[in-house]
Each structure stands twice: as structure tokens, then as C-alpha cells.
Image (tube, rainbow, N blue to C red; front, side):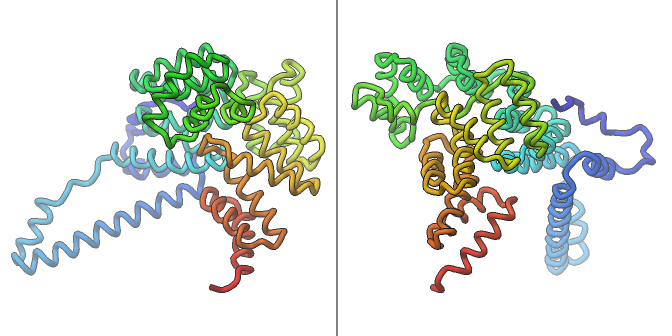
Amino acid sequence: MAEHRNLRLLRRRNEARGSEPERLDRFLTDVADPGLISSLRREEQRRQRLFLAAALMLGVLLGLLFGSGGVWLILRFREPAPSQSDAVEKTARILVSQGHSLMMVKEFDKAWTNLRLATRLAPDLIDAWDSLALAYFYGGQTADAESALRKCLQIDPEYNRAYHILGDISFYSGDWSKAREYYTKAGQTQRILARLALLEGRFDDAAPLIRQLVHEVPDDPYVQIMGKALAAKRLTPELRLMLAPTYVVSRDPATALGWRLFYSRRYEEASAAFGRALRRQPRDGAALIGRGWSLLKLGTAREAQSDFERALIAWPSNYSALNGMAWSLKAQGQVEGAAKLWRRVLELPHRPHVEIPESQKGLGMVYYERGDYTQANLYLAQSALTNPFDPETARLLASTLHQLPAQ
């Protein structure tokens, strides 16, 4: 987890070492992604140029109107320069935005670096801890996610979103009793409580909640599914698939290590870590899916498929297993089966989620290979918009656009 330091600790007693902005710049350069720092510097330079240009234009206009007094007015009434604390918070918010974008395309190694840095720069910025918690959660770091959420509640004990995400973690780990406890603390959570009641077979408890939700938020995808269950007076197997948990959570340190190794592209070591976790707990779904992805990256698609199949028996709506299974089938030439699974990923109601860009890319590739460039363009463009960091998607999209007939 990130260190919790007061920003004043960045100051140095010896002022001869440079100004505060210069020291902050050196600090960032030492720990952050070089590309990000370059982006931050360009943004700051652009902001300064715009400010100077505006000030110069204002000075000319005031000079024409009031003579030499115009310059004095600029110096007297211009807005004060932003304080160092404002500049640091602005930098932290840029890091949060960048980290969130990286998280949504599964670039977790970089996302964690940016978000941890944001919490160090601005320890009381709740958005930074919230995004860090989500990045840890999506990246298989359950204990760190819960720790970041507890930090949110230290900053603001009434931050109900933290309780809701803690409830999600319990829900996906299978502890539905604890999930209900957290969801109740979160406040307005009728949707998830109704969903839980349906999945647990408590239809009579779910029915009044669903009626209220259908009246209040009729366009919500989950509410629409539950409305169908209410109309049918039961949760059909098809509807259960749409309401079932879409993630699986593990609290095993070996599984968490496996995912860290996987996202740093150390696939053989990741596979070994997941294997150790599975020897201790064969029903660790996160380890099973993680080993499947590691094997897929190592080029053993058939072995990966076996792990994904086992995971989908227990968690048939798991996004990661569905996406991984699709790529496994695609690697073995089973294109129709892969496309069917990717469509299923995109049809599930929980959005946004981190498997969407890859599923869109997969469908785009299928249509590209078929020569259906219109459909290929549709899916590849959507994937590229969400994940601008994938050069293969960008290359395929450019090729697709070249193949489209001129309008």
C-alpha cells in the first residue's frame, strides 16, 4: 500500500536545493511513469502559455484604455498564483484520471503506480483512495482493496460508496451475509438487495423491492432483468445467469501474488503462484482463472481452455473466464465459439468493466478476418476508444478503415 505522508514532508530544510515546484518535479520524475510526467509537464506549460497570453492581451487593452495605469491594474487585480497545495492536488487528480484509464484496460501495474503516487501526494484526496481500491479489486489484490476502502472511511465516515464496494467484494467472494451488512450501511441499495434475495431464493422478500425499482429506475439493466423475474413469478435459469456474480474474489496471498506477476508479464511465475494457491484450495476461482490466463499468454491455449471451462461451471457469468475462454477458442481456430462468448460478455448488464475492450477487439478481429469491414470497424473503433494503449487494435482499425468503401 502507499505511504501516508503529509505533503509538508516533501519540503527540505535547505532551501538552496531548489524551489518547491522544482523539488516536486524531481520527486515525480523519480517515481512516476516517464510518459505520464512528460504529459504533465506539457499540460503545465500549455496552461502557463495560455495564462501569459491572456495577461498580455489584457495588458494591451487596458493600456489602450487607461494608459500606463493599465499595467498597474494587472498587477493589482490579477488572480493570485495557485498555491503549492493546489498544484499538488491538481497533479494528484491528473494521476487519478490516468490511473483510472489504465485500470479500465487492465494495465494494472501502471495504474497502481499512478494511483499510489496520487495518495502520497494528496493523502486526504478520497477520489485517489477510491480509484486505488477499485484498481486493486479488479487486479486481484483483495486485501489491499479493502485497506484502501477503509482509508476512504477514515477520511469521511459517511462515504457510503466505500461500504458499497466492500459489499461488492463480499458478494463476489461468496459471503452474502456480510455483503448484506455492508450494503445496508451504504444506504440506497435496493437493487443489490433485491438481486441477492432472488439469487438466494427469497422471492417474496425481493418482490416489493423490485416493484419499487421498476417504478423508480425502469431503464436500469438489472432492474429490467428482475422485472422479468417478477412477471414470471420465478427466477428462470436464463435470468439467473444474468444476475449471477460476474467476478470472483480470492483472499489467498498466493493468488494475489499470481495476479501481480501476471500483470507485470511474468507469466511462468504467475502460473506457478496460481498453482500453489490451487493446491491449497482447489475451488479458488480467481487462481483458476489466473492460471488459465497465464497459460494462454504462454501459448498453451488448450490447457488454458480447460481452466476456463472449470471456472465457468462454478461461475457461468464470470467476465474474465468468458473472455479468456473466447481467446482460447480463437487461438485454436474455433472462431464461432469465440464470437458467441464475446457477445455474451458484451450482453451482460454490469457495465463498464475491464473485459469490454478485449471482447470488442476480439469481435472486431473475427469480422475483419471474414472481410466484413463495416462490423469490424464498429467493434474495433469501440475498443480503440476505450483502450488507446493497444497498438494492435490501432493497426487493425487503420487497416479496416482503408478497406471500407469511400463514401
